[in-house]
Amino acid sequence: MVKILKKEMLTASVCRIQVLAPHIATAAKPGNFVVVIPTEDAERIPLTIADRDLDKGTISIIFQVVGATTRLLCSLKEGDQIAHVLGPLGHPSDVENFGTVVVIGGGVGIAEIYPMVKSLKQAGNKVITIIGARCEDLLIYKKELAAQSGELKVTTDDGSCGRKGFVSDELKDMIDSGMKINRVIAVGPVPMMKVCCDVTQPHKIKTIVSLNPIMLDATGMCGVCRVTVAGKTKFACVDGPEFDGHEVDFKELTDRLRAYKDLEKKADEHVCKLLGIKE
Ligand SMILES: Cc1cc2nc3c(=O)[nH]c(=O)nc-3n(C[C@H](O)[C@H](O)[C@H](O)COP(=O)(O)OP(=O)(O)OC[C@H]3O[C@@H](n4cnc5c(N)ncnc54)[C@H](O)[C@@H]3O)c2cc1C
Ligand code: FES
Image 1 (cartoon, rainbow, N blue to C red):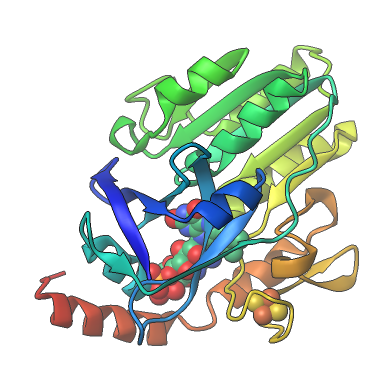
Image 2: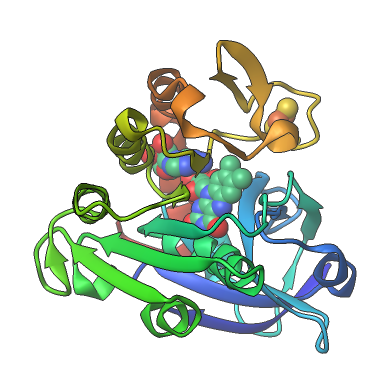
């Protein structure tokens, strides 16, 4: 059992939870994730460790409510216990002094880039961060990322904050302006990561993406999280979740993420009924 010390809604559908998990906090590195099982009979879901506090022995996770298990997790309150939090899992992010790094976060991916931006800055990089969301209300971590980045660019689809357009538009303009970029890191929805890779590929700028396939055991045993990278099968939970985006088969990933849509809808309806929520 893992106690929820703090819970807050960052937007109507994005929740931040801080839990007491001293062993995970001590071992966690940027890019690691945990598997969370909200209640004993719930499913397991992978969530990135968004931050940690070594003094308090806590980790924070930030998640968007998209279905049954995230809804169940979001229904827990401060002081409640989460049945299981397992981790840290996955390969940590590759952090060294690359030079100029553009780090891109889309939607809830914005929270996932926060530990990367912090550690890349500490490693001596010039970090330019681009964040994007559908509208201003969905933009999270603006202040926190501005404090850690050399420069912060903001885009919204509807123009309610920053530039009207997509994160990839901002990236393209930077490249077209002749800026020397040594590495791009993109975390967010699959179509966003793919477009960022399409923008950087002709310029041969190494682009790292953090893949989010469905996961089950998250220990490399079940094969559910398999993705194709450079023509080879990889398990995102143990070989990733970060990969060279120019080598990823995004179409296969998109198709596999859609495979259980009907069952996911039914499970969410069931949880809504249990929680007395009318969707
Ligand atoms: C390594 C890793 C780290 C992650 N970190 C975070 C995080 O920090 N914060 C966060 O909000 N989410 C994160 N995710 C995604 C998160 O695990 C899923 O949103 C969650 O499993 C959905 O569970 P559910 O039962 O609520 O919804 P489901 O019923 O499983 O899905 C509901 C809807 O969400 C879509 N969906 C399901 N799984 C994913 C997925 N992995 N990525 C994108 N869409 C999905 C489905 O297609 C469906 O439309 C991460 C995924 C991975 C693999
Ligand atoms: S989730 Fe089972 S092998 Fe990765």
